[in-house]
Length: 114
Ligand code: AMP
Ligand code: ZN
Image 1 (cartoon, rainbow, N blue to C red):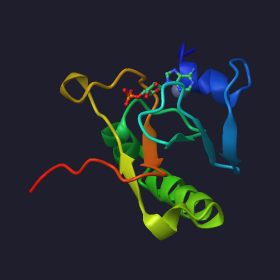
Image 2: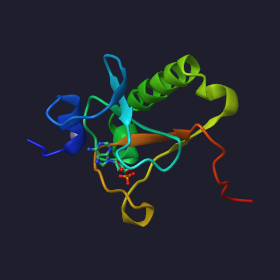
Image 3: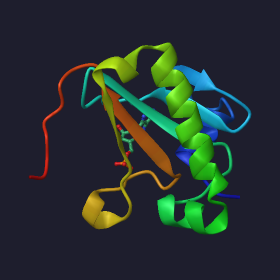
Image 4: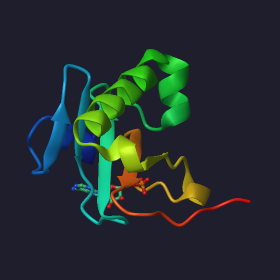
């Protein structure tokens, strides 16, 4: 048994503000939002990070982006735009080891890169 915070959210054992659910994916509000809209999208099947996910079953990543497309279109986030981020490992500051995609938007985001 894996003791995983996000698996517990999926199972309803820890409360979260769910914004999206389908047979594969759950989306919920981040507890400490870094933007006006800050959501996390996770697959119901546990993997620890994006590389493990795409090695085991790359269709899970499609499931996540499918859910994000449906959510952002329904909630009109796609019009002004949004950002999808995933952190893998210590240099990126990953703190929860159940693969998750951050969806950030609802306001202009600081740009990075040239
Ligand atoms: P990361 O640093 O990429 O691993 O992201 C983990 C994210 O999970 C952080 O943005 C946290 O604010 C968020 N988080 C941690 N615990 C919870 C929780 N119980 N409900 C919702 N979001 C959470
Ligand atoms: Zn998990």
